[in-house]
Image (tube, rainbow, N blue to C red):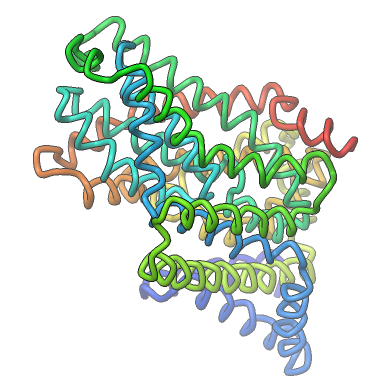
Amino acid sequence: MSTDMIALLMFGSMLMLLMTGQRMFGIIGFVAVVFALWLWGDRGGHDLAFAQALKLMNWFPLITLPMFIFMGYILSESRLADDLYRMFHVWFGPVPGGLAIGTILLMVLISAMNGLSVAGMAIGATIALPELLKRNYDKRMVTGVIQAGSSLGILVPPSVVLVLYAMIARQPVGQLWLAGVLPGLMMAGLFVAYVWLRCRISPELGPVLSAEERAAVSRAEKYRLLLAGLLPLGIFLVMMVPFVTGYTRLVESSVIGALAATTAALVKRRLTWAVFETSTRQTLAISCMFMWIILAALAFGAIFDGLRAVDALKGLFLDNLHLGRWEILILMQLSFLLMGTFLDDTAMLVIVAPLYVPLVAALDFDLIWYGVLYTITTQIAYMTPPFGYNLFLMRAMAPPEVSLADIYRSIVPFVGVMILALALVMAFPDIALFLPDLVFNR
């Protein structure tokens, strides 16, 4: 049987098994081992799985994964983010759409604390959404803001998705995180500009705080809130500055971040046993899930390496279809957008990374830059119907007056902004590569 037919059979088998509702890592790992046994016999099939497990266990930067997840859960479970929102509420209230703008900035800081979009969505929906609706903000505007802002968690470091990409693409996590900084801030800036301009044109969408509310907060209280709200930012700086300046490696910085978050919660007297237990349990569950996903992806990718399927795909695009390298790249991004309507970010990466990542390298594109492109495309997939994760999370957390139709309509302008950001990073790769080049002198 030809290589092309074997690859198609693998993908077909995997897609059929996905319909059974079983866990993604189990399906992909099962398909990989079964095909390895078929292609190379008992010894080859067994060796494949064990070799990938050993490769995973020997990947030292993987230790950063539980450290950053634990840091994020300590900060969110101890409610230190409440101070952040109160700070933005006071300081941005006089600006048109100011509370929505403050919510976006809150999401940026939450992203820097956690690296997962779920945490930002939970905090935004429970803290920001009731306040915004109470102050007569347009419900479609605010639900779109929270969904778009929470999606920054998978781009702004410490992004867990970029850790997964780093392992599969065999790229340095530190460089990928730095590559996500400027695109993430640019996207947040585009969100802020859109909200401000929209509320400037239609003030009823985001009314400013009344003069009475502004007068009720003293200058001393405003500065107290500023100091309290900047505590999570201080934790992020304590963690990242030694890494960027070269005093620590990434693993040591992740430990510093976890210790700093725990210490801050302890000093603020919010580190209860319930907070610690919940944070530990969630860290263990998510870390194990990602480890199984990475193991399955490595095994699946090893099959394609052995089949040399990437060479066949490259020949199809370049020799048979006569496409240019940029045309191939655009087609790859469009396929991610299509898959994002029914798959999550990890599923997309695991399914296509064994083909796409070597193909990107063969086309002489930078794999660090491509990691940012993939992540931005994943952000868009998080918000696109019918199966965007953020859509369902918002529906579960929103009050009854916010319908599913409102949630679907709310994301349209923000998806447009994210597509613009994706186009800018594709057209100007230095947006993503400037910081990695500066820090690592690549």
